[in-house]
Image 1 (cartoon, helix red, strand yellow):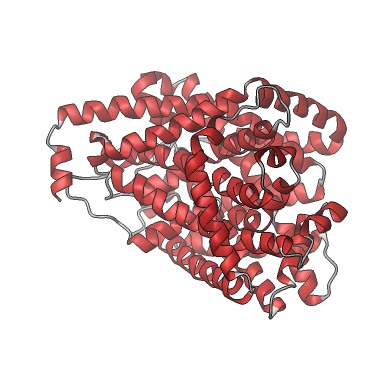
Image 2 (cartoon, rainbow, N blue to C red):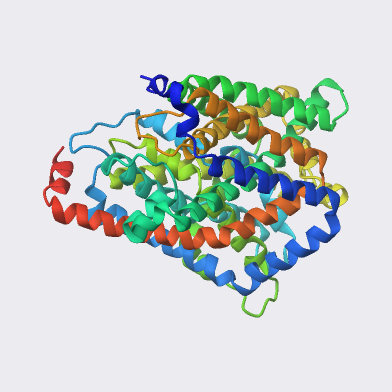
Length: 520
């Protein structure tokens, strides 16, 4: 039942205007700066990025591996028996609904896009040549960079937020509130405000760049299907359609998001089946994927700790550190959403179930969609590396992949619809979290008012549209999001520390809680 109506009369008094306005103003200022002085701003940001990625790169790698190891400890320690809710609370959503919402909120649109083309980015890298085989490592690195460590960021923080909301009954759905066991009343003062502003700034920067990334692909798909020239206005039209879809779902609350997520998964399964069964590379796809999973398992810790201290190729600085930072930025929103929908599940169920469903969807996408293109390259059917070298256009490479398939136009239609649906569900989750951030106080069972959700729905769409008109600024803003991840890393450590402190007190005070949960 929607519990927001009683709050309409005092909506203005319930909004935390500083967290709603200041990050937007700051992002808008950066966008204007990028458009007014693109070269100068790019040089400054590049220097900062090099400093953080090259000099302090170990910081990102340590946090990534540390959070992953903590997630395993959480699942199998006494903390794993804590139920996110009352002792006898049942899961609010079915396994399918829960896993669908979790996967589609977790950068599913980006996963779909990069599944087709990420191996191309690695194929000519000098580090791959050092490792030995393009066949092996171009299929392994994508599932490493989108695999256990990225999902561990989501799951550990989801557990912390879920505990805060569903066990402690917190009425502030904010990053700072998760730090209260350590910071105490300082959360209500300047330190807490700085944490929340930084979190929202990172969320807006990451969102704007992510959703500016793959929409040109959908524009080129539409151009290929209709014969219309690809343009900025076509891309904006696609974003508007996406906005209409996710806004419609949002006004229907969590039930609408759940239904849209389920539809997304069915479209996703259809696309996977189409590529796997109709492309003529079924055996190669499955065998390469199986080998890549084995290679990742065998070399996981060496990949996670590789720093290239002599900078012979700077591969970890270019890719691994970049990805860990990018996932840290996205940790501002997605874990809150996962924690919210995980009510009724134990910490063990949340972590292990999250890994199972999250990695199943991610690995399947990269194995089928990525290895199909790799198979075309290795078997001499299509020189995708040559296409990318000539055009520098990943979008053209992806369309070329589909043109090798039977019923290519139907496949492109399926791709476009699936990506729009994925973007819509990701926006749903982001908008719900950002809307909750705007409140001074909001219970775990309450939803933000429709007007607040509509404000954020439009705001999150305006920034990608602005970036489309400022073509050169997207890379700059992406760099901003990576830079923002540096302090976010410290906040993640603080949140995890706070959770363990609070959860330990909870178990010590209620020693039978874990036993009851394991018996239920």
